[in-house]
Length: 172
Image (tube, rainbow, N blue to C red; front, side, top):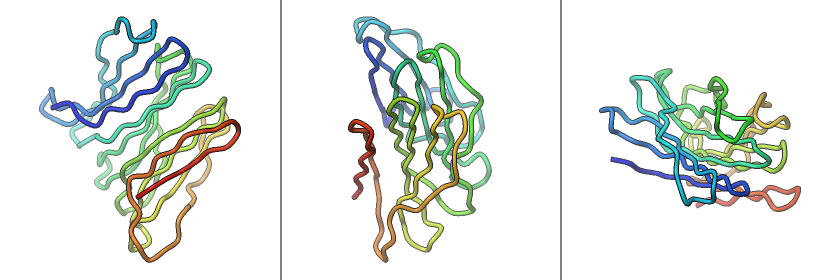
């Protein structure tokens, strides 16, 4: 099965990530178009582990592409990231964005110029809250995680986008 696609564009470059089970395990795949979606390159497998990798998200700006996903390669679900500085031609090593022994899930990434923000659901506080991490250098390095919501309820399915210099986050 191929599930949970995420798409973004940067000029004529269109980038897609999704969760795919073609190898008998849920992995993250990527592909791109360099001509606005008229033609597509081949599928590229981005994760290689025996754990489950899923719920990817992708964002692009000025030739930089960032993707995030969740997986349980460390024994608990954490949020991971890749970045590319050349429109998805080459990718960095993965980086871990969340770091706790509780469930981190449903990541969503947004970028504007060199500013990159990732939001996700995290239950380290005893209920599901929205957490965020950000980078000011295109995803090369990341700051510490911060909690966005603070309520007794459960927050889920965050989404993020940029509007000029601002980032906007919504959730259920």
